[in-house]
Length: 233
Image (cartoon, rainbow, N blue to C red; front, side, top):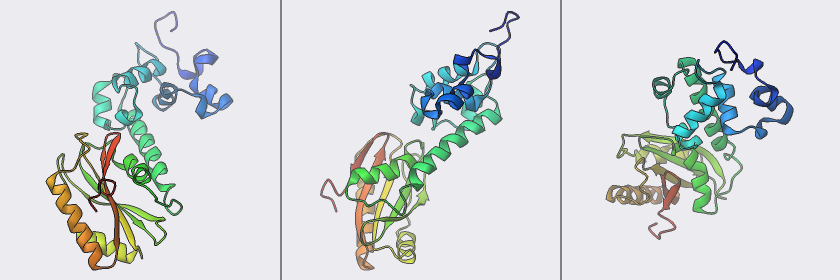
């Protein structure tokens, strides 16, 4: 802080406190989460620097990037002085890009041999959501991922699954095997009666058109449930 009470900009800080310069010298991997977030924020407010503000934001999120990703633009603007719409949009957009990169790198190259690998595909897509979504991974006859798509989106407690659309897309993609997943925003990693019913409905539909249902997993904030692992497929 300067003698007149105004905070310095990132360019005016001492070298060890400048995240941008630190990234240029040492690479992005050398930065802490708060330093990376400070670069997105750009500047703080009259009471705290961008790094201090970033630290406070992360502390509010239990130092979890996944928890931060659940915050909307409106949430960030409302809760933090110094975070306007433009800064909030940058934060949300950056987290979304990371999520998409994590998912898209698997398509066309990953072979699925276990439920934990399916979790790795689906969890980044749904772990931050406050509502339910239903996703499908389309695979070839070698269990290699061809495509991953969201099928439907619902409310906090459930989503309606369009089985006919799932099968139609699988046939169009030339997929001979599918794996499905949905999330439980509550964090409960066990299936409801409705989850069990829709799993059997999907399995029956797949069998009718010669497609194999590999698994149905439930994503539950760091945990997951596999119908296949539990012997329910």
